[in-house]
Length: 199
Image (cartoon, rainbow, N blue to C red):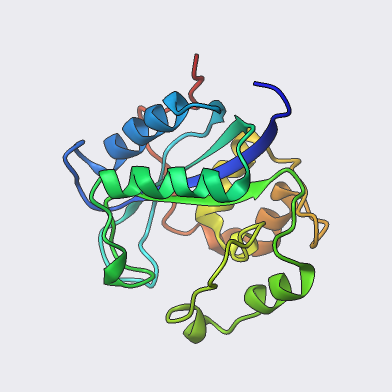
């Protein structure tokens, strides 16, 4: 794989699917991602159990983060991830923070900023009530919510704590620490699921 870049994806699910439980779906989905042409998983966090957001909106989630090596452009990589979600039965018509059988979020690709710093700032600073109903009409990298989400940062910190946000200039470990200890309330690694290596 020449001219490759590193990318990070967040994996989440809180509904059973044909693959089994939410945690089983994440493991299966990771294997499918790894088997895709021009994509290779080089690190995979533990699975974490995370309360649904907003509180009471559904069953607990299983979450993980994977580091990929790829030579695909970001839009093509995102299309591949969306196809895998669709194959699992993901229904995007149910709303932004709804329960789901599989969620694959493209979090970052090296230090790439898309489409530009100004639009990034707009979406990072969007009020929570607007986040629920508004979504950008194009790919934003890094994902505009990563600095707010312990369920992304905690597993990410296991595999790449020193990755640095190209605009905020903070590492994953620093962004997680900035959320404070209460951000991890209700979250815990799932027993029997260790950090995984892919061949």
